[in-house]
Image (cartoon, rainbow over all chains, first blue to last red; front, side, top):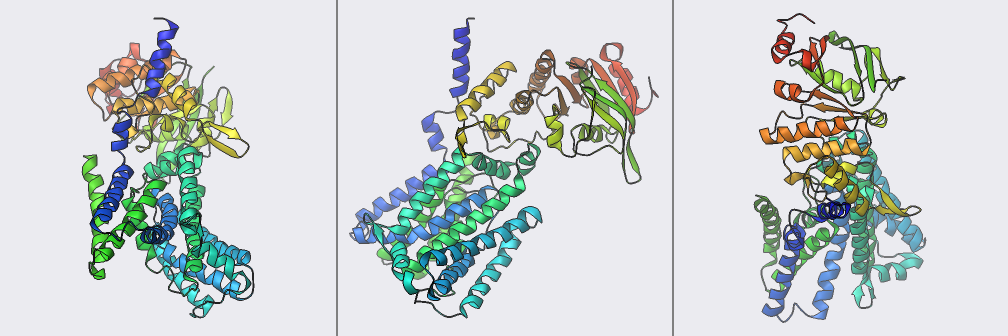
Length: 332
Length: 246
């Protein structure tokens, strides 16, 4: 056998996989969720003349942008096999932080820095207790859900804040304005999603968090810094909640201590519908975005079709179960 | 020169003496079958060599230097790779990602570094070809047979150019055809000068591939003989205590 044929067979081995490009695409959870979302949009465009209007699409995309941004951070946490129940409350406390600081006369930059610092602090505490003290993520972040919400009330004396001082314009533009006709939160979601997608696929950090979710013991034995990585995903997740909170405050033009309440459930739902596995080891940035979009499209569709709003929870909940059941059966 | 030399290694857990004064020397390219009943001290010995815990007494020498491991990573850096019974692989990653886990090659400028997937796939394919395994670098470990998983774990050892590979019951839970595959992998390692310590219950596997058979009984080393001079019957006697020692 010549050296040439040996090379060919090696290249062959490098490039070969069990199934081709189409096979791999069909094997991806996120592909099917995307198909479902596109189908839902197509059906709604035909069934109603209100869905495919510029105004409605603008609203739909902006509405899911906030959940989508946090779902990116949540997906990173879920990939490691963890969970963060505190994101809704983190949104609350961060919204209040930027509100309190800006209404005291500080600039937008200082206010945003305060909100993000608060988010990072919460993430550090969550991450330290989980990664270094070895406590279960569910318990730690459940406690933090209560603590952060309570701190939001403490910081604001439970009052609504609508006067943001000299930085008001910048804040309102960032959250409520548009760039090339697209709502700013959507632009930020797209930028963050691209960044998350690239980092998950192309960096050691990304590979390592999948490794932790797949087999934490194995990751540890091969010298992967498991604790530091776990800490980092909780900080990152909190930061995405902080970013979403700043944008939401800018969009609403006011902030109360109720900001983000129960949003943790929508965020987790978006991640899970998008293919994040609560057992760890699976999940994508695209999935988080599509999951968030699908929930919002369903919600919006029911509204446009004139279905009683009380039914929304049933449909969204049904979709969560359906998405996971689908994944189960496909794996068989 | 030995790749590994244990001198009077003992290990106690509280009042329980798991290992008593075990001495053993391993030469390059030598395959040693380590045998013993449950609780004889095999796992304890593997964990001491692998750096999971330190011996209570005695010394470990690698290439004529005394070493002390605080963590498994240090044993790995000294050229000892442990292939664990449960293989310590990530099912959700590809074969190549598992081979390179914790030491992925990157390319880029300054702090902006991305994984060099091309180099990873190429090197992993070379390692699998060298091991004569049909494992494919891009396949997920989840979809692999027991033999292919062993190949991934062993390719990891080859990647770090380990001088000694410890295999803990590699043939315990796989089919007959795959056992032959794993024994071939061990021969491939031996032919490249890598020493292998094969911990196993299975007599045919040990006698099929080992140069020397070492028997532990109740924490003591009761036999260390060339496989050719011994027999499954003798080793069985040594394991159970029917034969005191040789």
